[in-house]
Image 1 (tube, rainbow, N blue to C red):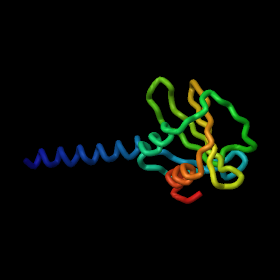
Image 2: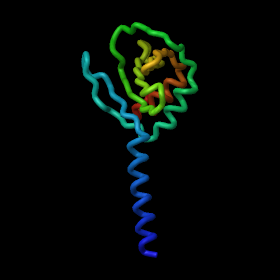
Image 3: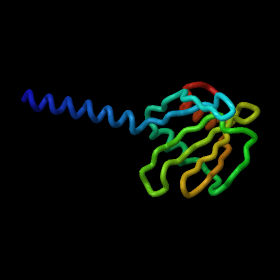
Length: 129
């Protein structure tokens, strides 16, 4: 009985450690011309991935922005498409987000509604837009 309890506790500890690291997203903020600094760790990436997948991206679209992204993050993907790299800009009015995403096969763009921008910014940074 004691062995069974020790094995169960060991499995719970190991599974907790694996899920915390594999399901997180590290968000970086631009601090200088070419410098980014890690500012926030989204512990559960499922919510972000589901939200981003439900947006209507303009696929295979390249855009020219006036400056480097204000924020960036990567979502790891073990599938054929590879990792997705996301770049986030705050619009000049400060009320919406514009984003691009890219992987080995495509570049996409979107301007997100004010309501969805507020939600996503809070999830990615822990702050209000």
